[in-house]
Image 1: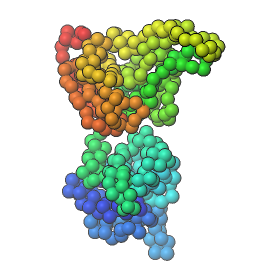
Image 2 (image 1 turned 90 degrees about the horizontal axis):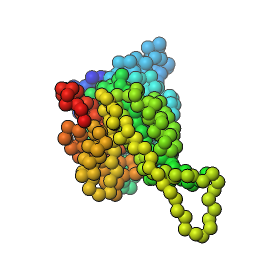
Image 3 (image 1 turned 120 degrees about the vertical axis):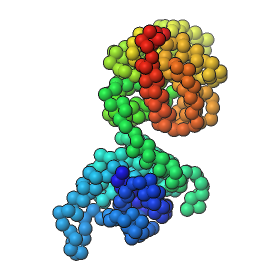
Image 4 (image 1 turned 90 degrees about the vertical axis):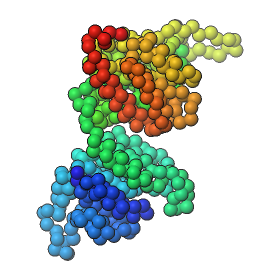
Length: 411
């Protein structure tokens, strides 16, 4: 494979030299593109000697050198067309911001916009810069577009601070490269329905019942499925998240609205993933005006909402149905009971009280309980990585179920 390695201006730029060697040892041809700032930390000659390839440092060759010509003027297009993968290591906060906003003011940023190849980014910067909301928003934007982020490691930084910001280890970066090259659009032609977020059940015009779901897990699943080629319908309760790109987005508020939206779209999907935290109950008779405080006890009469997962799985046909179980105790026991009782094919269960799991976090710790009896516990990882594993398991399980005789598919 032909890999273009973009090196931006950070102290970790020297580590990219060894990365060139490792990529070559894996059989890749590597061409290096350097930003102007990167050349303050390491010379182009070093990369040229290691890679055996021309190192590109400018968008246009210098006219005074006599090198300026039509070929140099469109070189970024030529490189974009022949590269199999674009790897940025290290990626500074500046380069992340430019990628996210579509700024093309040098060869590397122009190449990024011109390329349709997979992109892997390994950020490295000061801990405060990494944790700044602007940087995190840029990271989220790039992830939504399918860019694979190899998150920085924690440790002692060149600035003297300690925390996340160090360039990830070479093994992690190489793993990201391998996964990006191997990832196929294995969901191309597939329609995936995803529910996400909480529901709001009105008490009166200003109050409602809800839960702590942020929607992050469901949104991650929708984004990953879209990146893997699926046509995605995301039915979302109220969240503070940005609408993912390249999905059909359906906004709902109450459990009943979500049920009606799911009923409409479920017949067209091949995989239904029900990640929303749907309220089990609603107010039987919501007040038409604001309920005033009187000082007396207030009793609210609740009635059950439709169990969307069970209702859809009851008549799922050949569709694969994935449900979620957010538990506080007896996780495995409750998950297996839900798997059987609701006719699901896969249950994603977690203990929401565990550190690093649960609501409104960027990480999760789950176990996948499959209809064919397989239990797959996953270590703590980003919700995006959890989403990848859920889709991997869903495809594996569908292959297993479809390989059985039709008579054994019944329940």
